[in-house]
Image (cartoon, rainbow, N blue to C red; front, top):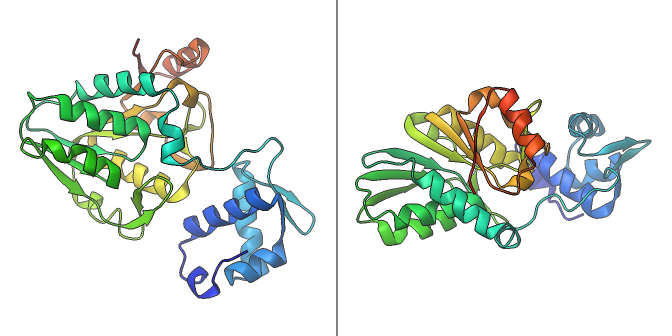
Length: 269
């Protein structure tokens, strides 16, 4: 394991646990002592981290260490890998989401492939004027650049994550704490009536949570594969969001479960 102790000592807890989860997923089994040495922390702290990860069913505790749960997959696909999945559905979700924006609005736009579709649809909305878009996605800022005569694009700042081209804490939420936007478009890896919105990546979950809190109306954009899924990072309760926009691949019974829970679900064709 190649985690520098000097770096590990200053890692936020959520980021340390995310990296710990990645190590366990890669190696299948890791001992407590190995994690303690790799991250430059005590065995007691490692056990506390593993207990927190086990509560979310992200790892399985065994004597002396932890294992990846049975049937686990790689914790997080890259942006490029996700971009080709449900591409047509994401485009239609993006077009519907962009139709909710009117001139003069302020919009928070999360990272992800479905939110990238929202960005592209906003660029295509030539009728829009004086819209401010705040994003923590570097690729999304670049997608919006061709429409900068009509859109003001603000990037949150923060620490760059390679897999999603996203900006996370430290510093990613400082700007969001000062804002009250009209709309937030937020992506996620899981939508479930009982567990709410969840995400594979812990630092990104924190930024998503802050976006929802900073908006008058929060809209979740998620292709049908996300419905019924539950992942490590808690983002929000369903009661914290106003609308979920999904697509034709969404299982009908999952849509009904969400609607029975009182959520406004829009399933685009």
